[in-house]
Image 1 (spheres, helix red, strand yellow):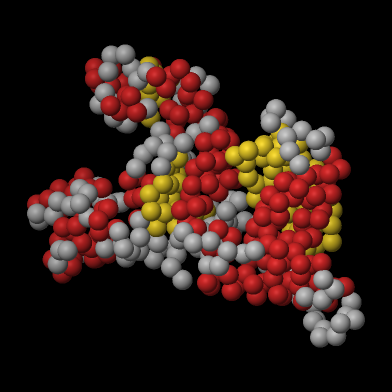
Image 2 (cartoon, helix red, strand yellow):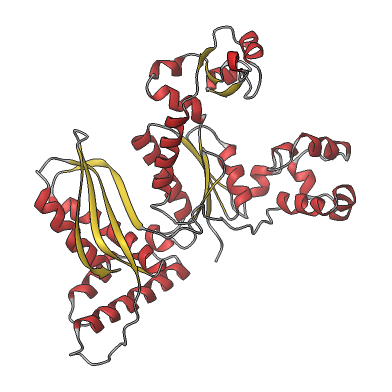
Length: 400
């Protein structure tokens, strides 16, 4: 199966965070800068207006001011940057547990196999959903690259900015990337670029069509790596930041384009969320002992409610408890966003299956779980959208 990798880049992160509390700053050239008195007098980030005036990240404040005398300078706020970066990662974690940080404002996400939840072109659909949620929930914008490897996903997020999604495939990467300057290729620094220029290699396409033996003679083993990168040969995995940490909960949430005003609307949305949570539980070989819902209404009131259940990884059981919590505690206000979380996870315990119809409940549940896992594998293999009603009907029947 071809991998589906996303690279999410938060646009002008430091400057955009500063503008959340001061939206008027978006209309003037603005930069986040260190304290000149403390020998940190350089530009850390700038907005698009400052960039248009020639301001460059990393240059001294004096140089930036000479280019743009009206440049507004604001101090950095690392506490706020960290809080919003963590909030973004919580959103990413609702789509996959394979999230690798690349600095405070960039991440790779491996969403391979999610086609059964989103259908065809699921990488682009997930990217658009993440872009929309970051804008609505965090009031920031992101550019997202979608591709079949990490390198091209990163180049995709750089291709169009701000607030955009770019899909790079085996069929279009030559058209999109080969005409770009060779220094645009990830990990080609100034020194390497100068040596490539000396060899009359000016574009990524020039590099891709160069003689690999010549590149090896110039750069050693890195020469072959450069050639492979230009040709989209990259099998490096997305290494989760929490690869050594135990998963404590699995959640999914969504913000709706229109408010939900009836319990039937809420149930329809919760059904999809519970299916995603259940699938991820099974993939992690876990069951949850606690179901938690989070609800935000149109007046921005937010609350969480939870209950303890028999450990499960089945969507119908999660949905049943989630709806009980909602119907018991909700006051009828229109709902703007809602989420489901499976917490207090336990490892799966094997149950001996029985072929007889009068088998105990535990055996019937085990058969339903085995069938759900089989469906997961089939849908992951063929990228068929998963219809929730199938699992629901199976859960309601006496026998799967």
